[in-house]
Image (tube, rainbow, N blue to C red; front, side):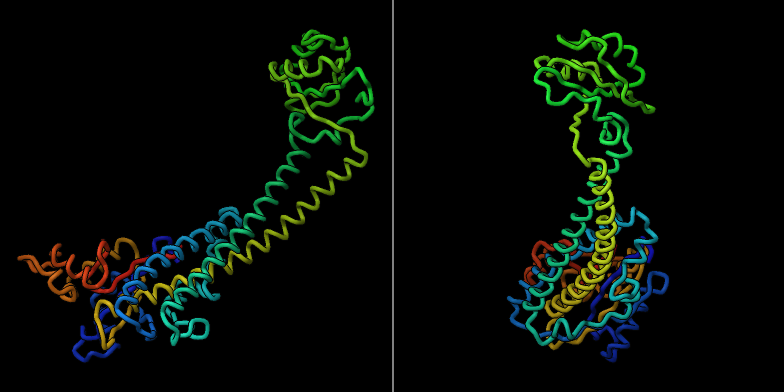
Length: 393
């Protein structure tokens, strides 16, 4: 599926062909679109239980909102897949299927799922069922991805503890506990990470940085490419001031508390997080793949319902229509729309007439009257025929 792929759903009365036959009407639509502007396929929509006109108008509004929600959920699930797969678009595309079919193949061969969404149910019930399903998918994928992201963040923090520089990494494996004064009523040992370029300044000034620093107490504990870690002894009553003065000098005081078995505990924590992250990665990928398939499938079913409801509102009863799916691209979609307007603007009645060159044009007042009569006041995308344009990301 190309990034520029667009789909058009067009519903027209079968009266566009002399025979009023669906196959000939579809062929007329295909001819109108033109092979250069897209591939036209039949899009099978069953007949549903039709209620009152007021109910249909309300359902048209509900379906418009639900379709927008479906579109957002599909996009969010796709973004989750990209994040899980580190932005590898080729791998992402492999997982973006609907019912184990490539998206374009599923659309070309679309069949209403009669088992899951019985067509003898009221349209309102179908809308409610589809709405609950897509909301459930959104919540499930969001929860699992959040769980994976949290574990991944914790793992990254654990890795930084093990592999960072001396200003950030865990000191459990660095500091010899014998260097630390413990259980003293008067003295504290402070660990200070000093940038290597400031080591000379440290040796020159640490004893006078605050009151009651024990002279010549600085011991080099460890060194890496960026920092040198020192242990310095001060009296407890001036500890806070010493730490404050170190920060002013851009030397980094490090917290360290000796714990029996600390090295082993840190190693186990990192190992456990790594295993948990791998497990959740697999679960998030599977749920993302399933969530994409199911949410995209629901979206297409909502579109099918929109076409049906709009067709009833637009063309009335008895219901005799043909629906075509056009697979195209952004540039060709504009040409296809122009061809549709040129051939089927008469379906809009007085709302769409022609200028002195025979080109279709809108009569704004007549269009407003037509929209009001069909319950579409404020719909800027109103056209003389049933038309929906969409992309599945």
